[in-house]
Image (cartoon, rainbow, N blue to C red; front, top):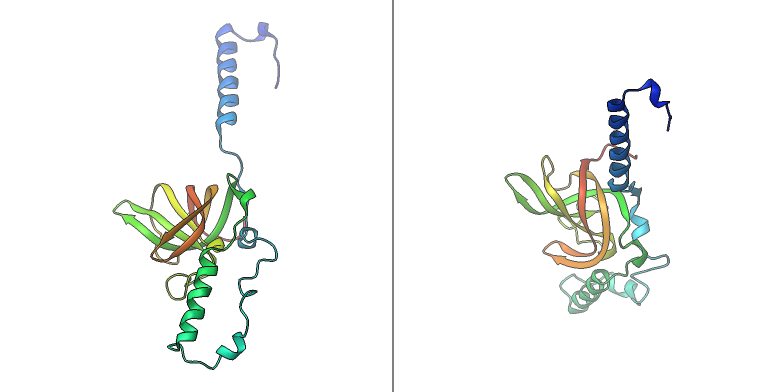
Length: 186
């Protein structure tokens, strides 16, 4: 901060500068923290392997999808994926991440709620990924210009919270402060 002798400034100008400085300090103190860019791998505990508890998968490879054993296996796999472990230390962190939109709620004003998923087609054209690879997003304000599978950057505070929707179970939730088109790494 530059300090000027009061004699060079009028009293009014000194008060204006003090007010501006005080306002800037308050604005900085109340501004959101910088968002840490987080990739999808950071949402999965190291070493977690959803197939670890499944044995004899090779024996099932030749069976028809309608076989009761295959149906039972798929149900068990879905349960493992829907209850996938999360990283508790991510709770409350201000993050920024990219992914694909799976709309859940829209209005005339725009997109209000969606799932953020790591790859194109997830939850719509293919089974949902593990819950620790889905973020349930609610935007602070409706956002325009995004449809199913739009690629976006989201910024906000990440929460560890299990939710379920018609498109899949999620292990994380975020109230997005900012939703922007994906334009590459930042």
